[in-house]
Amino acid sequence: AAVSRSRKSISDLMDIRPDYANLQTEGGTVKVSPDEVKAGDVIIVKPGEKVPLDGKVRAGKSLVDTSALTGESVPREAAPGAEVLSGFVNKNGVLEVEVDKEYSESTVSKILDLVQNASSRKAKTENFITKFAKYYTPFVVIVALLLAFVPPLIISGAMLSDWVYRALVFLVISCPCALVVSIPLGFFGGIGAASKAGILVKGGNYLEALNDVKYAVFDKTGTLTKGEFAVVKLSPAGPVKEDELLEYAALAEHFSGHPIAESIRVAYGKEVQADRIKDYSETAGFGVRAVVDGAVILAGNAKLMKKAGIQYQEEGEIGTVVYVAAGDTFIGSIVIADEIKEDAKRAISALKKVGIKKTVMLTGDAKESGAAVGAELSIDEVHAELLPQHKVDRIEEFDKQKLPKEKLLFAGDGINDTPVLARADIGVAMGGLGSDAAVEAADIVIMTDQPSKIAEAINIAKRTRTIVWQNIIFALGVKGVFLILGAFGIATMWEAVFSDVGVTLLAVLNAMRVLKVKEM
Image (cartoon, rainbow, N blue to C red; front, side, top):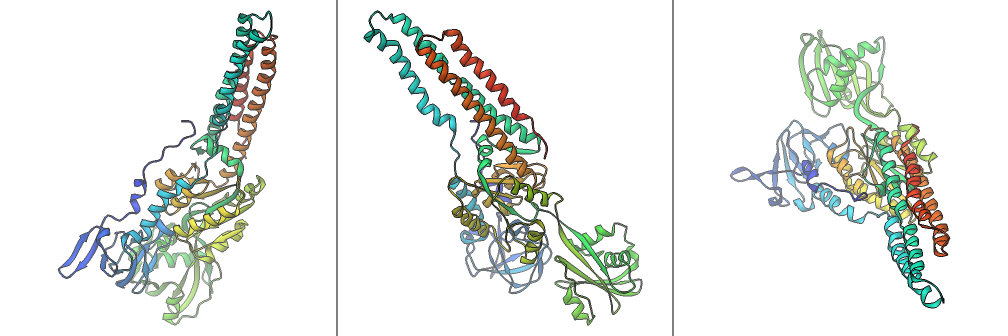
């Protein structure tokens, strides 16, 4: 019961399963179950709805939120010819999608299936007590019976009562209380110590398994990075200053609902005077145009600058770049990117110190973004532009590379990470901002969202194992000595009680040392 873990049913993932599809028929649009839609059918996806099946956009333009599948925070543009996957959320426009896969073959269906099946393939940590008791208990009972009845039969003058007494002393000494009480208590102490540090370990077997972790695999967005886009660089051009560039951009983006526009407004931090803005228009895939104080302000990507015939200075920084022009003059660029968590670098170096052989990052983000984060954090391998099923494939590859006793740990935070969390030997979820499904699928939850806590959890696990083995060796050593003394009639029932109850109390006191944790 101490090491078993209860999971909620797969219904925790239902927030990515679409409830219905708007099927286009000759008589109009009909709301049907996604299971009823066939390949080649056309469905309508309205603003705010989930895309129910995989397909290609036939008509309409919109931004789609892909974060549930890819972990990427910035919405993608969906235009005619673009591929959309089930689980995406349509943000603003109406999309007409031609379905190319039935629901059973769709991305969302595959994710749900992966989670259902992944847990059954997880490595099980063997429980020492169960294995030990299987042989130890029948062995000592048989020895005690032989000790009570064989000597009186073969030794002349031997009293049955004396040998029964010796056998009872032997049984009391052999009682494995010290092991049965102190070993689970050691693991509970380790779990308690971890919880003090903001780490929720769901069972003693996962704490034990942390000792053998040699591969640490991470999701990027929300795990190593904050998952929130923010202005990271302002590059004004000409006589324009940084605060002026940001003010013009904030005014131009004032009416936009795009997350990029929101991050610019947050960085500006002041109230925008809307009466200064006239003639606002937004072009999907390009950017915005607004007349501010009588001057035309353009804010958008490089395509917008080229379309307007404005000479601009290309930004080399990794991230989403917003170029800003006033009139026909380029006045600067703003780089918006997902910020790396403060302790992410410390987390990777700490893991290498505790004996991790390889650190890997798997992300649904673009290769450039993934490579930049990987380089900054000194991660050994980076694999980008992955869907959830591809992440599971990568985990399977690493699983084949590791030695039989080695364990693989995966840390993630989103619904898209759930299949991988379930498949890894040890799944670690970021609990503060992570999705409910990820928290449920994980074996360990970091409540503070700090990746450096993983190395701290490994240190707690190593300390717990040391103390548990101290108790095992101490208990078996003392019992071994007293069992021999008891068999020869030297040890009385008093010594037997000490070797049982006394050793148990000493082992319990030693196990309580686990609770004292030094912060990293």
